[in-house]
Image (tube, rainbow, N blue to C red):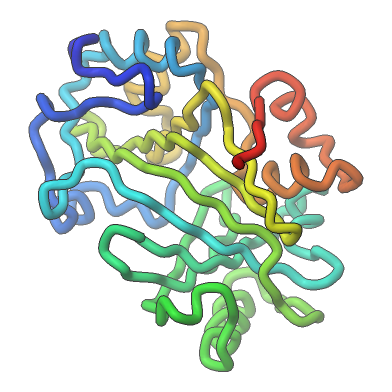
Length: 264
């Protein structure tokens, strides 16, 4: 990947020179609904340098001529923030509930993510009416309860309501040598119940999604001194916007990696 094909100003890759891959082929080659995610908060300049000399011959997801896509997620929790606290306390049987909207296509899904064996993330989802993206319908709540009962053997005791919204632009790469994928999220924005949005300044969130073994991009990042960090768009975002919450698992990331600025 040539350095000339990277856009420094936006913090995203200019992937116009990379061969494309369609969504159907990507899902066939690297669906990875059950996977190990490794996440990195990378300064734009570092990301540009590391990705420029990565020799893994990546292909880029392309749909309808687009190679960068707008995502919008709304996360749900109980009044007691049970989902957040399970993550903050490192509980084995934890979960996240969200709607995910693909803004460019106007499609939305209701998703339940749980932690499986050996830290593998398991994601279940169903199509969801975009008009209901900020609330759980009766049918949506039933799906959430059934999925959690099967995955973790428990369901939230309290009512579930929206607590956080995230927005970002995502570029997805397929790494054929390992059958894995990676995503690069720029302009990551968090917005809590007070309505004030905050954007991650000067960095991108790079995430690799592979099986239990680290992939070639992980090893390439490590060789350049870039290490995984604890970051969850839900949990770290909640901790950043609500400093009174327990956040020991993300303190290092909050102190050293996240520079947030208010969005006018």
